[in-house]
Image (cartoon, rainbow, N blue to C red; front, top):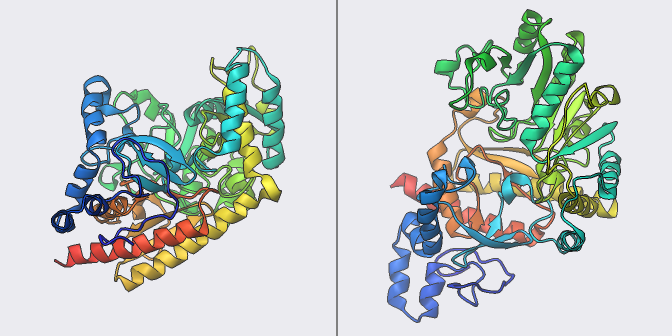
Length: 495
C-alpha cells in the first residue's frame, strides 16, 4: 500500500505519455513523492475524491470536451458517459484484467466492457488469431469455413441448442428471435419482464425502467417506453409482467393466452443488478409458456459463456425454445447468435423469416470468437471453475469486510458476476425491490474505488464482472482496496 492508502497491483506495465514509470496504479501521492515534494503529498491527502480524479485524468477530460462537440453526449453509447461524473475515462489499452487510461493510470477492470471480455484484455491467442485473419482478409460477403467451425464449437458447448445462426449485436439477436417466434406461432404479442433489457429495438425498449408511480400495480404493470421515439402502437403489442412472481405471470398469460407469441427474459436478471430466479421459477415459466402455445426465449447475452459453458439454461437445467447470445461469445469482437430448436430455426430462409446483415459472421469476428471459445474451454472448461471460485471468494470476503465497516449491503450473484447493493434488504428478488437501494452511496463508493485502482461502473445496476485473466492475487488486491474504501465511505457518512 502507498502512503495514500491506495492499493497497488504487483505487475508493472510500460508507461504511456504522462504516466509514472515505476507506478502500476499512478496516484497523486506517488507522483508527488517521485517529485520529492512532501508538501505536495500533504496537499494531495486533503483532496476530495473528485479533486483527485480531476487532477489524475486531465487527458480524459480534454478528450471528452472535444468529443461532445462532435458526438452526441460525447460517446457512441449513452451508457459510456451518462453516469460518469464529471466525465468518463478514456482508455488507451488493456492487458489481462487491467486497463490503462490515456493519462497512464491503471485499474483492475471489473466492468470488462459490460461482461464481454471474458478472457481479459489482449489475450495473446485471441490477438494472434485476429492478426492472422486480418492478413488473409477481414470479410468476403460469402460463407467461410470459420463459420462452420464456430457453429460446431458453439453447439459443443451449448448442448441444449440444435442449430445456431450468427449476427453482430445482442439487439440483432433478440429482434430476430422475436420475429422467429411470431412466425412460428402466427401471433403478434410479446411478453417481457420489468427491469429486463433486451437491446435497442422498439419491442425490447419497454419497461426497462418502470417507476411504480407510473407503471402501476406490480401484479399487472403498465408497459412503459424506455426511450422517446417509440410508437404507441408498439406498446399495444408488448405485455409486461413482474419477474419471480409466478402467480402474476400465470394470471397475465391466461388473460392473453391466444395472443402471446413469445416470452422473453433474462434467465438471471443482470441489467437491474444481479437477481437470481427463485427455485423452479424458470421451469414453471416454461411449462406455462407451452400450455399457452408461446415460445420461451432466454436472453443469454450477459449470462452466456459466463455462468457456465452452456449459459444459465445449463446452470438451471431448463431448455428454452430459442436463445440469444453475445458479449462473452465474442470476447471482444462484435458477434451475437440466435440458437434453438431445429423446427424453429429452420423457419429462416427465403419467403419465410428474413435474416441477414452485411457484417454478420464476417471472417474477422468469426476468427476472434472461435479463438475466444477455444481459450475459454481449455483444460475441460477449467476457466469456468476459476470464474466460479474467484466470484465466490470475492462475494464472501466482501460481505465480511462490509460487516466490519458497519455497512449494510446485499451481495448476490452467479458464477463470473455479482452485484453489491447498499441496502438493509437481505435479498432482492425483483426489479421493484432493486429500486430501494442507495444509489448515491454506491456511486461514491465506485469513485473511491477508482482512486484506488479498481474500476467499477458508477451505475449500481451494472454488474461487477470477472474474467479468466483475474488471479487470486488480483482478488486480494481488490479486497484490500475495498476494505479501505468501505472505511472511507463510513467516515464520510458519519461526518
